[in-house]
Length: 360
Image 1 (cartoon, one colour):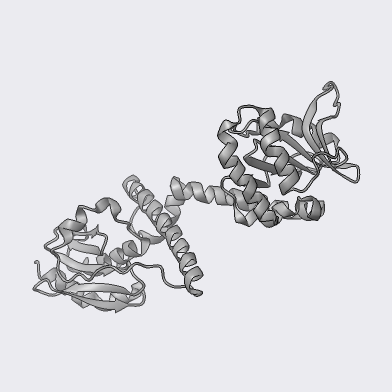
Image 2 (tube, rainbow, N blue to C red; image 1 turned 135 degrees about the vertical axis):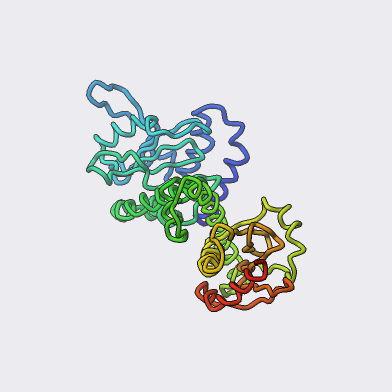
């Protein structure tokens, strides 16, 4: 079996049998030993390759054992400490790994509960195990990006220098990915301010921060969704295509009430907000800026006077590959004009001012 097939087979076993495993010993027998043998390729029945219950007396610590030591040419290369499946793998669970790492020739250590495997080395200080792993494998959620590095730890390809050289990049890339995921799900103030300051012209008050916290989450979700759509479309067609959905044509304001009922499904983008601020900057020359508001719907982003849907100034149709700005005449009929960039909105300054004049 190929490496990925062996990994998938063990992943299926964790999914099927994980709930029935109740002890640490059962975890080692059912999951960890197959990982060492099948995935990493070491013979668990050959003590010259894999030594279970490895003992190394350290100072006053006599007879303390590490669960597994993996050897190559008589030298210890990898230390493994096991916990029961389902137990969290905190760094305080790795005290024995810390001690053994210091006094053996091992450069790699693994803390595992049979499902999650955390790989450590000594990037921060020589011969001292780092507190943060450089690689983390979850058999129920395998990250394909780490598989080439995981293969370097297998018996057939073991190269400690190559592993250590790649470990630094792996460690920080994985930490950055976790931070990005955390920020996308629940952005903190600094993250929100970073984007708000680039798209919002006014003073960033607490109310603005709260608004942009929601908008940032929506924008992040849309961005990730677009990336997934692009990957899927590229896989199906062999070429990258726009991931914007085409909304049905709108010619009047009569459907706004229906759209408002689906407000929870609306996603406001940063382009829409920037477009709104451009429109606001234009029409504030003829009307108080406080009277200019926006309402977002699933089909379009509307700019209104006095927060009144009977006083539309324009609509931004940005939820498609070709962007349009919709301008209203004195009978409230909308005409759409294609634009290639947000700056094109400025070329409609007189029409926008004229739309406001209809209501004054």
